[in-house]
Image 1 (cartoon, rainbow, N blue to C red):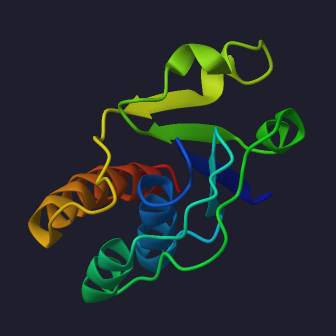
Image 2 (image 1 turned 180 degrees about the horizontal axis):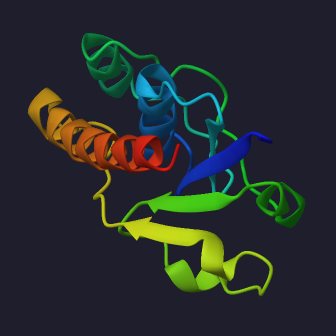
Length: 140
């Protein structure tokens, strides 16, 4: 079976999509699936240190340079998961990938927010990823 690729998307690829990618790749045991992440807008701000630290507390790293999606990238993925409440699903309306899109309404952890607010966002993402991984295990 050819490896299926999942793309987690948020606004800037600084927190939510990176968290989903890192957590998915940490817990997923089904080697037929792998995940990456990207943002819909090119971000220039550095990663938030609090968010990076909170991710480490949960056993994964969101370090690295943010990526921005493009049309060519989108064609390579079997599933696109919007990990954001501020990215409209309609931007993925092109015929070759519109049926691949799922939207999770995850609010932004927002730079400068408290550790507890960031933990709340991470827990929401982890719960969604846990359900996704369980679903993929049932497809073996």
